[in-house]
Image (cartoon, rainbow, N blue to C red; front, side):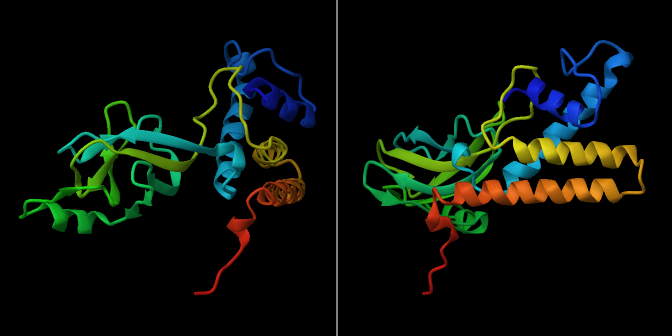
Amino acid sequence: MTYLELVNKVLRRLRESETGTVQGVGDVNSYPRLIGDFVNEAKSQVEAAWDWSALRSTLTLTTTANIFNYELNGAKNNFKVLDVWNDTKDIELQYQTSSWFNKAFIGSDAPRGCPSYYNFNGVSVDRDTQVDLYPIPDGVYDLRFNILLRNEELTADADTVVIPTRPIVLFATAMAIEERGEDGGQQSINAYGAAQSALADEIAMDAARHPEDTIWYSV
């Protein structure tokens, strides 16, 4: 569903006129822009509530001998790591802390070899996350970062979301009702309750695709 369609769904629920563009024209059409802000806030809340199947992606990088810092192209500093694999050696890389990496690199000649550990270290000029590897690669290795990649903020009318849209619409509607403050808060409380219920339903449906994420294992 597009950004414009989401905004118009919310406007209809508020019994407001639909708009031809979220950005509007001048101050007369400023309300659709406010609803657009609520839609983006609602989208962020829904994205953060669960590791949605639709947001799961794989980013790859290929190492070069004697280089330990790499840009994770496409990450946009807005992701969650699920796991990281050395596809060349068929081993899983393990996360280590910044302190651990500092001790490994400072005051010693770090060894070269097959990368086994990773740590995120800042962002590039185009805002992609940078990752450090240890040991320093001694050759070419293909690494796979399986991640949850959240969408960027919606700006253009035709921008789309891939996660369930019903809770987005309901949360945005609840925010708009709360902003109006017309009934002392009871209507917004009911609206937030409906949104939470819709979100729980969508999570339950999506969780069925990844039952391993909801199973606790004893060790």
